[in-house]
Length: 244
Image 1 (cartoon, rainbow, N blue to C red):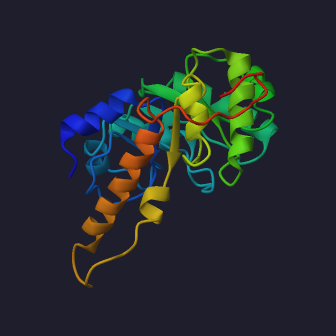
Image 2: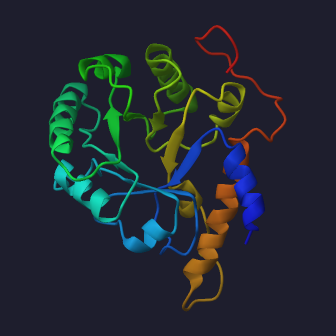
């Protein structure tokens, strides 16, 4: 395992929080995790510093109450309201309803609002919130260029203070832009490190521990890529008129 002082150095120097949204049996300590209610447990809560309860947009059975109940029960820091995948108007209606539910709920943490394209219009129809996290949804399978364009457009509209989260984003193609403009994005969630870790070792118990350590190597690598430590040798031109 990487000694805590060196992991902490990378955490403190990171421009973006990388939330692991995959299940490793809570074998791995990682500072940021995201899980839907049906997968969230106290063990995962204890294996991170910041826990986000996701809305699981592909599961119609998960309600805003489910997310908020789980977030409150597990003392999560952030709860994502419901996302109607790839449908802006339905998403706005769902989020407005979710905000009403949250107003009367015991959960008192931060809310994550999953926006859909057009993101700025979606944000404005919600009343231009700035205190909650703003999530960019619908781009899980998009190219880095599309993700960067969405983040740039939303950041231009909301300013530098609101939190912007990329749903299901990876680091590849994003890291150079973030290093050149650290304010562009605040967090993302992904499962790639665990999905790409090979099931190595002899058959039998505790193979998952080996997989978790392979995922840890990728997570540490990605965290450094999104930090102040790599040499600034790459730039990405964007609609800002400069290099990201």
